[in-house]
Amino acid sequence: MTVTESPSHRENVASDSEVALHVDGLWKIFGPKADKIINTPDAHLSRKDLQAKTGHVVGIRDVSFDVAPGEVFVIMGLSGSGKSTLVRLLTRLIEPTAGTVTLYGEDITAMADKALLDTRRRKVSMVFQHFGLLPHRKVIDNVAFGLEVRGESKAARRTRAQEMVDLVGLTGYENNYPDQLSGGMQQRVGLARALAADPDILMFDEPFSALDPLIRRDMQNEVIRLHREVGKTMVFITHDLSEALKLGDRILIMRDGEIVQIGTPDEVVGAPADDYVRDFTSEVPKSHVLTLKWVMRPPTEAVGLDGPVLQCNTIVRDAARVVLNHGGPCRVVDGDRVVGVVDDQDILRVIVAEEGD
Ligand SMILES: Nc1ncnc2c1ncn2[C@@H]1O[C@H](COP(=O)(O)OP(=O)(O)OP(=O)(O)O)[C@@H](O)[C@H]1O
Image 1 (cartoon, helix red, strand yellow):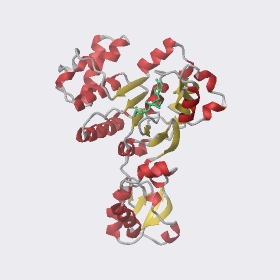
Image 2 (cartoon, rainbow, N blue to C red):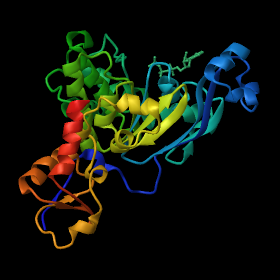
Image 3 (tube, helix red, strand yellow):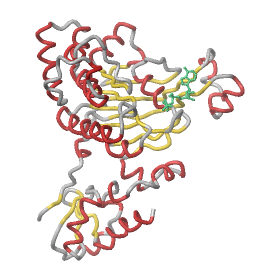
Image 4 (cartoon, protein in one colour):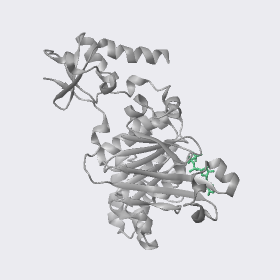
């Protein structure tokens, strides 16, 4: 039988039981007496009430999650939801008030300064909205900067930096200075610099927010391509839902410093945890995100069917042509197991509902 595979990069998520990043009970309360507040009932007051009562601000409240090796994990929320605080806590650029962060088995929260610095240099790369390039250094030397800091030889860092410049499509611009490049190209330098260190994990804090929409789309595609090529674990912060849905294997949605939902794009759109997420996702073109799992009917009608067979993780839009061409019900499988059937009506229902949105 022919099985139509979903082309999604989401299949790259490691099924490995090893965890790349483990975050457990993480809190950040801003203010001089945060330590005193953490284990009291006050810690559970709303952000507004705690601030009114004590002058302290809850940045992050009891956040726990795991990121799998090779996963693209997106943290998404509106302004003030705590995204930047959370990503800074992960490498202790901000000290947590409580909780632990473990990177590939190493407890970041317990590290002494030297070990922490070493971890930041060797195991984690950050990409920020403001590229943070050194203006007096050429592209190649910006890309090599992290390698220089950690003492690699000039020849080794040149070779590595050139490979990274080529990887991000900047061949020929090695000797330019940052101000001779467009915003999109400067962010490519930022990506090359982050990858040059061969880190265990890449963290992106709203890297494309300052770019205009077309360049932004190019850069998102670039991240997808680079992820396919290098397979690194990525934590990506954004306030943009379409960016989150496009890039994320899973998405963590935050509000007021708390987790509202963690799920795959189709889970977030197909089964929003509450009205807040439902509101967020109401404008999303469902056929671009939902998989057949969400639209199929029970497999009872599958007996005796032949014709096309589709994997249940195929995006509805990608399955539409096959199903509509076939005309009748098609089997939906999970691996080899038949889990449902889908016909043209099931597909059209999603597409028509989308037109009505
Ligand atoms: N140093 C600080 N002192 C006091 N409060 C802070 C501090 N840093 C952040 N906050 C507060 O913590 C909350 C979360 O802020 P954070 O910047 O992490 O949100 P965000 O989701 O990244 O927002 P944005 O997208 O606007 O940057 C906000 O209420 C903010 O005012």
